[in-house]
Length: 238
Image (tube, one colour):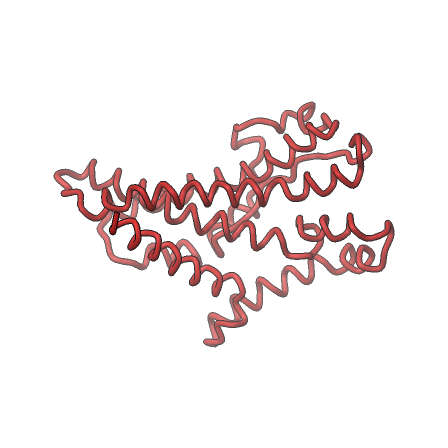
C-alpha cells in the first residue's frame, strides 16, 4: 500500500501523524481540483450542468467517492465522483470535449509544478532549521509532506488519467479525434474497466513476485521519488 510505504520510513509518532494528515489533505485536494477543473472548463464551454448540480464547490463532501479514496491509499492516486457534464450544451463539441478532457490533468500538472517550485525555494528550511518543540516538528513534517507527496500524487494523477482507456481523460481525448461510433470507442466502452483492473492488478502482482516492471505506477512513483530528492538537493545549493 502507498500509505504503508510512506509510513515505513524513519520517524516518531509526531512525524507519522503529520505525514498521514499531510498525505490525506494534499491527496483529497489534488483529486478535487482535478474534477473542479473539468466542471469549470465545461462551464466556460457553455455547459452549466455541474454548476446546477452544485459540483462547482470546494466542499469535499460533494465530491467524495469512497472507492477513489481507497485507491489513493493503496497506490497513491484515486478519484472523486465525476463532475456531471452534458456535451450537448457545448458551443463547439470538439473544442469542448478536448479542453474539458485535458483540464483535470493540466490542473494537476500545474499544481505539481507550483509545489516543486516551493519545495526548491524552501528546501533549506526543512534541512537547516533547528527543531525546538513538537509543534515545530509537526509543522515542518506536515509542510514537507504536502510538498513532496503533493508533487508525486499530482504527477501520478496526470499519468493515470492520460491512459487511453475508458473512462479516463486520455480515452476522451483520443475518442474525440476519431469519427463518432468508431471501433476504438466500442471496444473501450466494453472492455475499458477490465483493462484498468488488469493494469492495477499487475502492479500489485509485480510487487509481490518481485517483477517491478509490471507495476507501471510503482515504477513511475520511484522515478518521482528520485526527482523530488533531486529538487531538494538542488534547492539546498541556493
